[in-house]
Image (cartoon, rainbow, N blue to C red; front, side, top):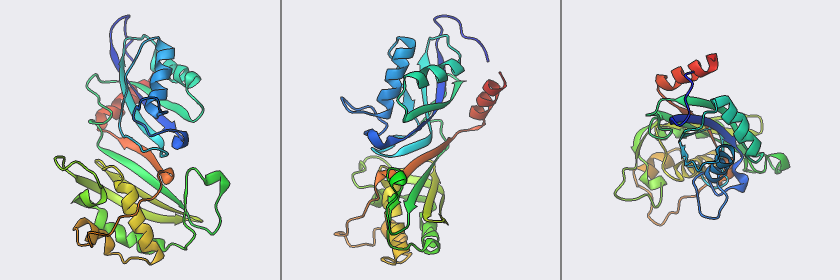
Amino acid sequence: MTQVGSGSERRLALVVEYDGTCYQGFQLQHQRPTIQGEIEQALKRFTQVDIRIRGASRTDSGAHAQGQVVDFVTAAEHPPEQFLRGLNFYLPADIVIQEAYEVDPEFHSRRSALTRIYRYHILNQSQPSPIRRNTHHLVRETLDAAQMAGAVRGLVGEHDFRPLAAGHPKEKSAVRRVSRWEVWRDGDTVIIECEANGFLRHQIRRANALLVGVGTGKWTESIITDSLQARLPQNLSFPILPAKGLCLMQVTYPDSWHKVKNINEAD
């Protein structure tokens, strides 16, 4: 990696894992604990300078991440591996920097992203699990994962997801391109994973709530296409699953991102 001299600015990117239980989401909020706030505080303690970060995805209050990506500009001379160790020293135990890289000055964690991959965990058994209470949503009724997997076909492709995103600004497009939406069972857990170029606020949790309804037999598979085509009664309120079951698994980028990562890993 090219060493940066004193006073010259460069852009760094971090891959962050966190348990979002105790936070009011990723985005900075006044006098409320957030992931962004904690990282920026750690950066100030490590560099002695105020630094504003950008995140690839604004996870909701209580949601988690295994592969959130943030980026920022700094004049500090520390190599990325020192940023990783230094920030982890100051961060609370429920937020960890897993990777750190120097990236192209034009890199933007949100705008440069190709897709985001989210996973939702449902604990499908009669009794709750204390050790999974913050990461899994409990559904006591037996879920038919095969029926749910059949219903997700209506979510894949390019659609206007406005019906699943109440409150989305009218002047902003609600069209998103979903490359996959998958459901499978792993023992007592039903996992729903989706990947798209972007998601609207609450889109995933509302869509997955409809899938749970299909899995319990409350609705047929057509509920998905009927919802997107606004063929449902206007007085029907869409359910929403709790945020605790949702985890941002990965953010994908073009090859240039991987080339930067490979260069850093070779140092």
